[in-house]
Image 1 (tube, rainbow, N blue to C red):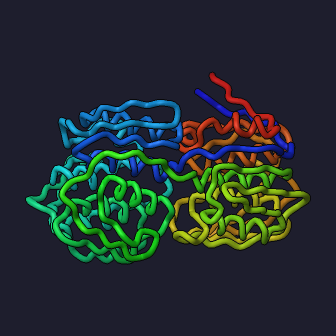
Image 2 (image 1 turned 30 degrees about the vertical axis):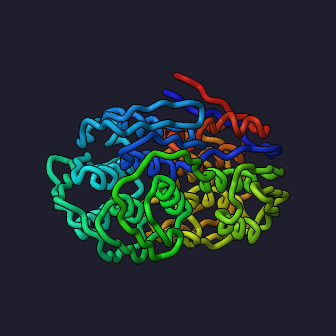
Length: 418
């Protein structure tokens, strides 16, 4: 069993480089299989467990995959099966992108129902609605989603709720559909735009990504391309919040500052200083910050993936913070862990009421999911004494070398093996 041991109470200083976006990469790599000609090389890929799972699924389907440092090359010209039923599929939610990609190219797919973090009900009904609107027959049986279609025909699809996964998945399926597909009430997240840009680089015709209306004109085929994924907005935000919590000054490199505006705004409201550069941001924090009210919202609102790290920061902010989690109903499982460290938090449904304390104290805690893991690392960094974080396999799904990055900033953190 691996654990993180953190001796907290130290300010952090220095520079940190942000990896490619996890949420973009786990959609772009499955999208590569739509190409029936050539190979695709995708750069700026994070070295995380979810990417390892995607790589294994690609190979299982018959793709030739070559991995080098932060790039992956995929030859999908000779796929041997459209049935993704290996263990890795069940480990991660993003495996559902193989549904849209396989359906687009082969007009059929069978993918085991996806896993991922236990943060609440995350149905795929909007994905299914989109696939059926394009002409696919959808059957769920024996724990898998089966898609078949004689052909896919473009149509207008209005999503009942804003869903990143459904927006991307139906966009994938529509790339080779006959005619024009219009997706309304679409998600606007940066990784939606990144996947659209990747598909366009392969020869797709997609317009409007980043707005709530996306227009996809079907093409005959896609061809492999070279592409570089965007920086990870959530990893960047995590280091911004950690700096604000610990105190100090950190330059966060390889970011797109515009993607971070909602985070920057809240940290400034709390009393931290945020300076934007072309492809970096500098965070300065000194003294105790002030409590803040946050409501998670689809982009460009405050991201749900940073609610848990931000709630850790709020535990030591002066006054009361109120956090409204409007996206997922079960994303407060980390609260009990924070309470072990002396936090004062009351949860009422989707709202957490946090009364700041002077400091947290070290304890043995558990990462209940990926972003909760980041929250517990930050809690350990600011706490007096020693914190041991268990369940760090969740953290490794989204944060490459998190302990080494914090160690380089002056934190006292190490990984132990038992």
